[in-house]
Each structure stands twice: as C-alpha cells, then as structure tokens.
Length: 342
Image 1: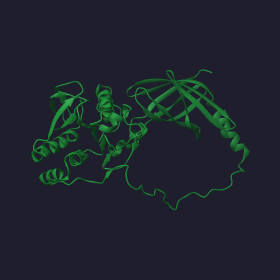
Image 2: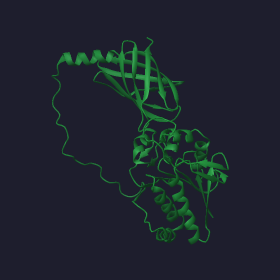
Image 3: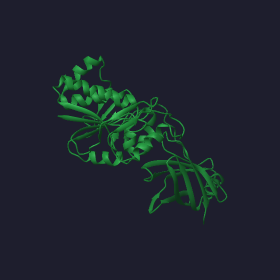
Image 4: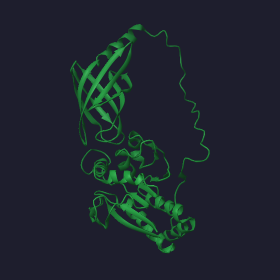
C-alpha cells in the first residue's frame, strides 16, 4: 500500500494541504484501497491552526521519515511583504526551525520515499539547507529566494527530481498530487480522478531528461563595446579613492527577521580591485563580486546561520561607520550597521 503523509505546521495554507488530500483520497476509490493518506505533524497528533481565518485541522500522527511512500509539505499563507509574525517568510521560518527540517532530511535519504512540496513548502526545505544544488519550484514570488538558498529554480508548474517533486503556486497542489498518482499508480487511475474532479493536470512536468533546449538567443539589444583604454585618469583615480574609503576591518551587525548576525568584514583595495572576506563564527568566506556603484559598495555572500542563504549587500561608509542592507529574494531587507576597528 502506498502511504501518504501530509505534513501540517502552524500557519500552513489550507488549499496546499486539502487539494492533495482530496486527490489522494479519490485515488483510493479507483485503486482498491492501494493508497492511504493522513495528516501528520513533526510533533505528533495535535490540532494545527491554518493561516486562513485560523481554521484548525486535526493531525492524527507524527511524521515518520522512514516510512516508504510520499511525504508532502504545504506552504503558508499570509502577508507577502514586511517581517511581521504573520508574513509568509516568518511563518515558513518558524516551520523550518522545528523538527520538520531534520525529519525531512532523513526522509530524503530513504530509498523508497518521495518528498513532495506545494508552493512555499519547497522554501521550508530550502531554507533548512535541504535543496542545495537541486532543481525545484515554488510560488513565483519566492523564486528569487529559492535561488538564494542554493537550489536551482525552474519556472515550471511541477518539477520532478527523482525523490523530490515540487509544485509552484497555491493551486499546484492538484497538479502535484495528480502527477504523483500517475507516477506511482498509473495514468488510468490519475485520469479517473481527473474525470471525477473535472480538472486536468496543468503544465509539462519538468525533468532533467531528454534534449536540453538551446538557450542561446539574440535580443537585438547587445551593447556595442568600445575601446576604453583612453579613459580619463582622474576618473579612474576617483573610483580608487572612493573604494579605499571601505578599506579596513569592520565589526558589523545584521538585524534579520530571525535574529542578529555578527559578521566581521575585512576589505582592501589594490590597483583599483576591491577584495575582502567575511567571518561569521569560525567560518570565513570571500566576498563575491564586490563592486563600487555610485559611492555604494555591493557584494554577494553565502551564509549558513541561522539558515542557508546567499545574501546581496549594499553599504555606504561615513568615516568609520558603515550602514546598509542585506537582502535575499522576497525576505525583507535586513539593516546592517558596522564600525571600523582597524
């Protein structure tokens, strides 16, 4: 029997969970009870509050990562902007900080278990560091954040990466569940459910198989390059001088929605080339592509705590004081403040 565990967490989106639940339940009618489905949580049986008017759903069991079958993680519903407790990033962040991340990590290591996500469910896994280097999809508003975690964003309705199947958008719960029914029980069962629901699965399921499309296209807007060797020396010297304003060691604090990060920056300029490192705890990494743009220094930086993210920085220096922001996808920009220590 194919066992399906739909994982609930406080603030989950109702449609993300209920739509797959109905698809799987309908499939049992046509497959002689070859499938069972239940609501579970990372903590065990309890009443779980959704983010839609606080409606509660009873979960009957605890998520078992070693049970063969399908584990499905829904997303959340809430405010898209801001960093309040009812925002989607905050809800997903709280879910990520429960035992759910560790349990799903164990499930991904099992031979006969498929982990599926709907909408923001993939972000819960990605923010927990479980999707690095893996193709996945989420709600279109979260695709940039998905990429910032190290996952490979694919703008498809459903993405199949073997033991990981992800769906983008709230209503993709129907498509993900129908695809899994077709994949595991066969197309005739899936077709019967489609006929019952009067709904046909949307979109092509993306898989890393077959011929890859030629991505080389010409837009007609490529810039014309010119010889810049005769640039005004005073302009070059001015840029070098501006860059040197950031030279030195800086103690900085980044105020994120999930806590403050203490990061030490070491920045230097040589022959107009800006380079530097960032140290968080006992981990030191190089700044990625540091550039000076309109008196602002920008760079990218991967962090692993409190979650795995690739952040984009933009800062200014006023004497020995640094201010700016660090941002990843749809997460609110986090304020950075710092002081030059040498």
